[in-house]
Amino acid sequence: MTETFPLLDVPTEATDIISFDEQANGGPAVIRYNVPLPGRHTGQRIVRLDLGLTSDDFNGESVSALPVSIEALDWKKPAGSSMWTYNADAAALLYELRLNDVRSTFTAVWMGVPSLPRNPDGTLVPTLPMDDQTILQQIPQFNDFPPDQKAAILREVRLLESSWNSFVEGLSIGELRLPTKSWDGRQMVMTTTTAETALGKHLEANLFLIETYGISSFLGDYGLGPTIRTFTLLPGEETKISIKTWRSTQSEVAEASSIVDSYTTEAANRFTNTVQRETTDKANRQNTESWHVEAEVGVSWGFGSAKVSGGAEGEYQASRESFAKQVEDAVQEHTSQASSARNLTVTSSTEVTQESGQENLTERTIRNLNLRRVLNFVFRGLNQEHTTKIHLLEVTVGFTNGATNSWQEVPLSGLRGLLEQVLVPDKIDQVASQILGVTGTVMDLADNPVATLVRLDRQQGGTYEIGPVQPNDDSTLPAPPEDHSFFYRFRRGPLNQGDKDPEDRVDGVLLKERKLTMQTDSLVVEALLGQADALDSYAMTSQRAEAEAKWLANRRLEMAIDTLEKIPDPEARATAYAQMFNPPPAPVSPARE
Image (tube, rainbow, N blue to C red; front, side, top):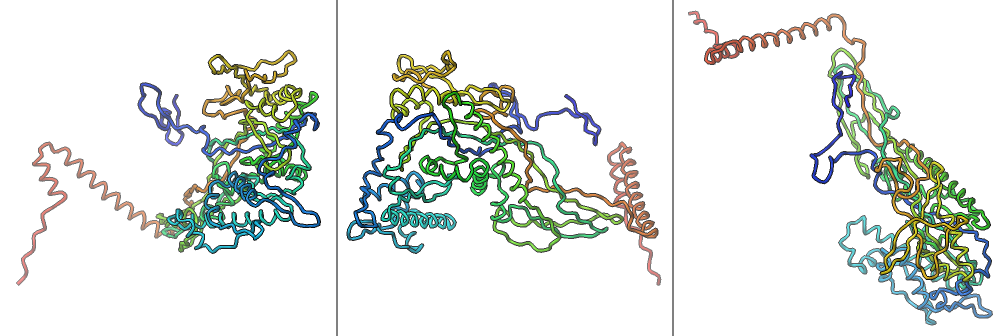
């Protein structure tokens, strides 16, 4: 393939940007633009399933049984008293277990700091605030950390200290205040459950599907953005300019970061809040808060419910499609806000200010070397196009009876075991088929049905053979049998994306795809020469004469070199060279007497 570049008008053979010699086991290595950016962003959606079940359809033990940690509290409210009594040792253990699930990194650090004093009756009391130096002295393994990491540790300890005090205070007034992950999965918050609910007096059993979605981004084309600043330099003029990007201060980075191209915790938090606002109304969010507390998902993007009984499986498919569209809109809104905060400034300042961030202000000196015309500089932002893809990665099954610490979550391969634990026997096969029916087929971007499950049949010797699902005559999927001779699993890798390049595919089912444009922190500068002359006729004539004198000097040098090249004898050429370029000094006239 041959391309012609208009400016050069020279046929040029088009080649890959970079390639290496062929290896025996492969072709040349090349730089590609359709490789997904690192740091794929993932989130989960919890959907409560309306399976037409009643309380009698659930195993009575699974609904009423309390977690051992809650039962061991021995939480009681004596008659005539407004305060609750409890087992202090069991309470401390419950808190530590919950904290391990939420903050595994600093749990061991904090649990060794306070002395956890007791009242005379054995109940727990809040810890007294400690100064920073005391905390660091009791954590010797962190003494060698740099100051910024020490500050982060201190913040964690303060947060955990406050969490413990809230937990202790709640026990005495009939409130179970336990640490849990925030909706974005990256912070710790306290959630409160009343004693009646925690002890199982107002329980409600539910089955859930937990869908894991991914957002992958691919680089696209570059393009010129809006004009940031223009400068005009007069002939021979010089000035200094300062360039400041949105990465100059930490606050600007936090505001302008995006999950698409500059992943940060602040960006993830803002995006999660945007998705929650798009996908979950306030009433539904309040009703499902306990689901989130129990599920402890990494990043919660939304909660919903769908009826899947009585031939209403289409409602679930519609809710998934609607959710994918809402996430797509949330990505658009999130990136638009981040892009609008990416301010680039170019000023003609002679001072450089130190800023706290990833870089300082950049100062440059520019000069107009022309003596007849002005020189204009146009600074424009550089935009980057991204292709974002929303895809369904995995589906798991969850259950809770509404009590604290009763959440269970299993992959589809463990569906039979979970249902045997929480349902009465005659409902297991029916519910399993209903759940498999709504997870076994997903409509992709082009509204094509995609089979998402594979069946694993147990062979002799304990191995499993992977094959396609085998539906019943009525198109339902048979439930995994009691002997566990086969089970289902969510398919791995890209699904139904054969029309795309291998590097352009994403894992799971592609649900949405959109092109987005983001401002970068780079500038493109164009220099435009003015057309009008800035000299009068005399100055122009003087410059022309000076230019002609330089041209004549160069012409004379060319003629001398050309003459030397025509002399064949080296000695004669050297003599001529010396006479031309190093002539002997002129004779000195004798002084007059």
